[in-house]
Amino acid sequence: MDQLRRTFLKSAGIAGSVVIAIAAGVLKTGEALAAAINSAAFDAKKLPDAMSAAGFAGAVESSDIDLKVPEIAENGAVVDVKVTSKIPGTTSLAVFVEKNPLPTAAIFEFMPGTEPYVNIRIKMLQTSVVRVAVKAGGKNYMVNKEVKVTLGGCGG
Amino acid sequence: MADAMKMRVTLEGDVADIRVKMTHPMETGTRVDQKTKATVPAHYINQVAATLNGKTVMTAQWAGSVSKDPFLGFKVKGAKAGDKLAINAEDNLGTKFSAEETVAAK
Image 1: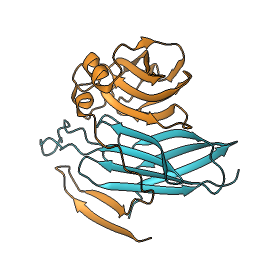
Image 2 (image 1 turned 90 degrees about the horizontal axis):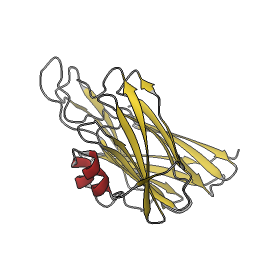
Image 3 (image 1 turned 120 degrees about the vertical axis):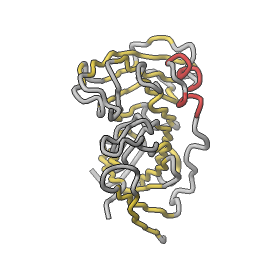
Image 4 (image 1 turned 90 degrees about the vertical axis):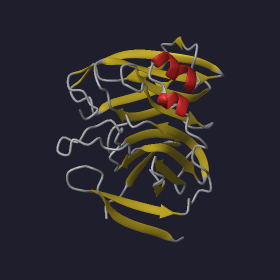
């Protein structure tokens, strides 16, 4: 299968230049990427709006969502989030940072057979509650944990 | 030429533990460059899809608040040696990245 590779230098207002390696090839899988971005969820400035827009309104707290985040994050630019939902029938999971300017960080959809587990690293501007919401069996659940941030991580 | 995406797949029984490391600036669009004093435009991966033998197993939408050079870990059941795992990602400028790994026997 042909794979077209192009590299070009792009100056994006950053001292020096950013080299972006592009591997633009035919999608080998034939499956489309997520059809549309949930802009409403990602543009929401307040956590309750973000939750509703992302489809997690009315989430009840659940101790069956295992959320691992550091108690104290020295570097707010890279905060490790590891979450496993033990609730049967979990189909989607979202990560929010309450005090970020835009609280919605990531929304995942799991097809049947995929474990409701993700490990990602996120930016936190300041000490804040990290919330993970899951949808399981059509119902919404959530867990909240506060992460103290000593050095905020949005590049300011 | 740097690899935009590196993948590692470990098989534990029939669960494939997948770790992906992507190279991407993940600019939120709010950072001010200290030297130029200009706001750096938003440039971040906003869509990710993972497939097992061509069938989608996971999709994700990301904000610019996912960390620079994003790491993604996830797990897929029912995987076996010889299966093909692929990750396809796209950023807000429409640039596409992908990586594929064949599951090795444990």
